[in-house]
Image (cartoon, rainbow, N blue to C red):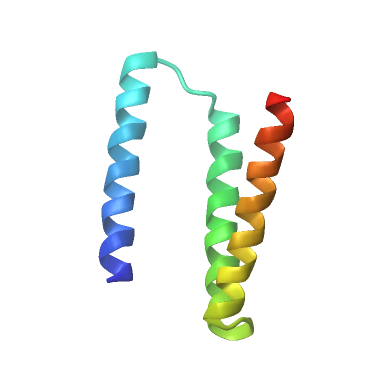
Length: 79
């Protein structure tokens, strides 16, 4: 199931990227490189932590805390 989801996300992201590139005509290659490297590092780190260091319950808690922090930042920005 996770592999299927990853494949769908990849092609969905790729089609969005190509559409953006075609519509805008130019890309910031430096930003693309930084974001690509960050995404690869985050994927590797997440996989490593999930399989070797944390239980699924701990992962859920960490993601929950991160989402709450993002929500708090958004609320503070509006105020």
